[in-house]
Length: 401
Ligand code: HEM
Image (cartoon, rainbow, N blue to C red; front, side, top):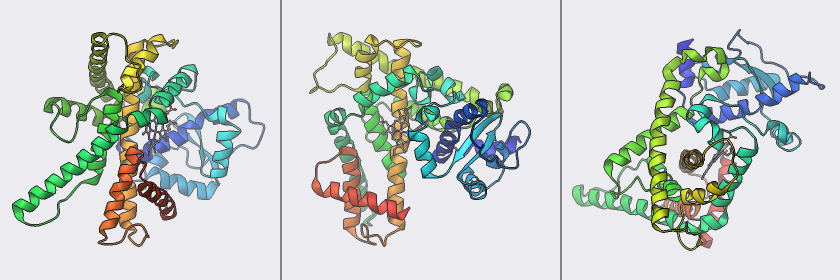
């Protein structure tokens, strides 16, 4: 069983995270409907349930088949709504947009919470990280602050130069590498790991917007500090995608199969010490400059904003420092891998479908358009051609899928 679980547990991919989100988001709904001894018909339960672990072995023990393929096959057999058991928890698997739409409209309140999973406790400041928090007053307040202060058009506009600057830097760095290679060996062409390229840009953009820091590409920052930050962030991404046994079978949690809980506690400590340093720096900066700067024209990062907002807010349950660190971290974590994976997918879809009207083999304008679209994506450029290209790109990608 350890071996079987390991296959799954080590699959730290966005797919697994999304799968966990999909499946777990609904287990409360199912539990509710069960507890009300469901007036309507119950969804069919997939066959193959084992004692204690339920259907986990279907998702973990099939070697090369990833969980979403297994669930897809079950949906072909049982229809768009069926139930499984993830350990002791009943879960509803929905694979039709019509049902999903109904759930998120008519039954919104029933599906708006999320279970308290171990990662939220150990890596998410005991659920102060609102991305792991259940639906309650705290979650609503933190979400409101984040949407207003980080994701609003006004804030994006204010911090536009950060995105512009990071993209320009990355393009310049790549150009420099290319010219060095060409001057050295006389041959053209360099290999660029685009996943890394997109990853560095998005990470720098988000880190600057949230904490006013810059840790990748170029040599501005202290090497040791860069390595420390990279390591702890990477560990977080890996551990956040892991499914721990305790979440499926709580009474076996003490076994800590794979040692993931121990690893989470260690990473949480390192992450917190990084966050604490940033926070202290921000507090010192405020003390030196007197009252917090509320002038829209001057740059405030998200930690500055949080310091102003959280200190005066009525947020019971956690102290201000915990809320600020937890919220800053979830924005950094939530915005980095998602955006860079999205960009990498976009690029690979286009390159694997060179027949599309937006990119042609050996066509430099295709590459140019890709760059300008990445630029537009990150900068919300007002350049007409880049925006038009993005709209075309969206339509094209939808068709490719
Ligand atoms: C293509 C890019 C993105 C994708 C695919 C994506 C995907 C998701 C998904 C599926 C969730 C829901 C998680 C859940 O309900 O448990 C989520 C939540 C969240 N995302 Fe994103 N995300 C993206 C970009 C971003 C960016 C750029 C940021 C921040 C700047 C961000 C911050 C967050 C936060 C804070 C949450 C928690 C929200 C909540 O609890 O209400 N995401 N994201």
